[in-house]
Image (cartoon, rainbow, N blue to C red; front, side):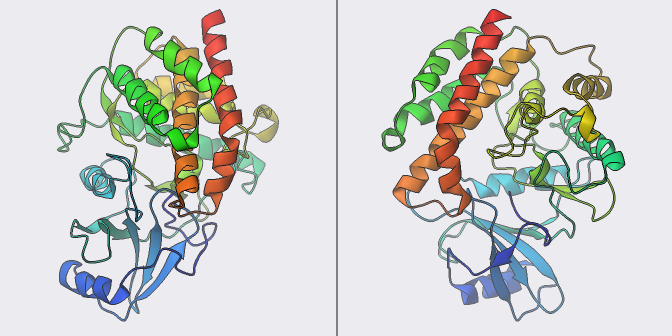
Length: 354
């Protein structure tokens, strides 16, 4: 995640260094109202794209950059993140303001963008244990509202008609992540993943829809108001594109099945005892907000998303082995890959039996 908030993210020593004087000069020339001197700290979050807090006497900003070193084609396109956030700013989707983008790699070594530092808190635990029990359902309803709002945006009207290819989302995504998985020889192969690569293209449901999709919509990729059940900014748009809204929503609702030590998830806990809506209630709320009566083929959407996340973790494992991972959690995620692949395989079997 981007790490725009203070409380739960942590920022400190710069681990992926760059020429701070060159950055300060660029900020002076490109960010309205900027005035130094500049202090730079790196957030602990953001294992994919290194993320920094920029502090001046009068303002604070966040910088997101591509990681240094060799990268897979199309990966870590931070300028794409900036583009979608700029387009969505002012809609019903809470977005941090983008102040500027830089394609010139001579400034700090890679492309980057600078956005507003949104003050609030990140909820890392999907059980929302730090929130009073009687308030937790309101936080879940707010997340539900925001993802429904995203899928209701007229992407052509906000200038995102060219942001991706409408239609055939599952075919393209399955192909993309399968190819990335198969090509990363250093990270190795897993039988569960091989089975999914073979099965998924044969099981795509009929029908198609296109909206802007976030691609990584989780509670820890949002900044919440410090005390209210309100999302102030959705973070980490690296995986966003034009795609199928049910793929995006199922990835988010996968938290009901996801062990909390892999990514933010309930780990099979009883949501009612936690003061949370059930999975069925959460799906129903999304359907009501988006004008649906139900979501058929739910198991397929879950199988696809577990596979997709496993493929992402496979890529993280490759970066760990290459020494280009920028986050301490990357090694833990790489180690969780076999378990995540098994969850993907279990969802596939459930779909086949269903």
